[in-house]
Length: 82
Image (tube, rainbow, N blue to C red; front, side):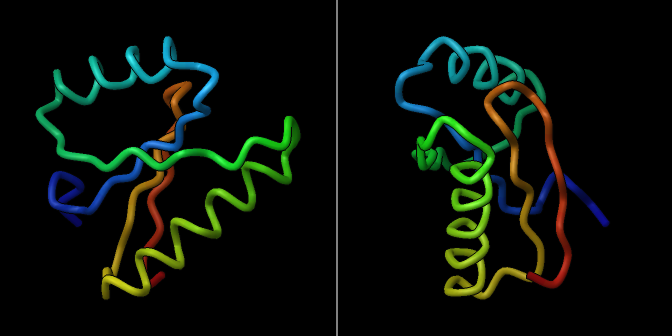
């Protein structure tokens, strides 16, 4: 799998633009295109789960076979066959 061509979503809490700036620099360095997803902010893991679920819904609607979800804190996960 060539990860450079997988659609990428960066999950960002609106209240943390500093984190978004950091990950934008990292992804820019790698030359990756990405879409910023406004995180569902519940101050708990439920918000994270809902954010990832919404991204997978978007991926299915767009017909993506794979998607990479990147947290603004720099963790990434790749899923096949969304």
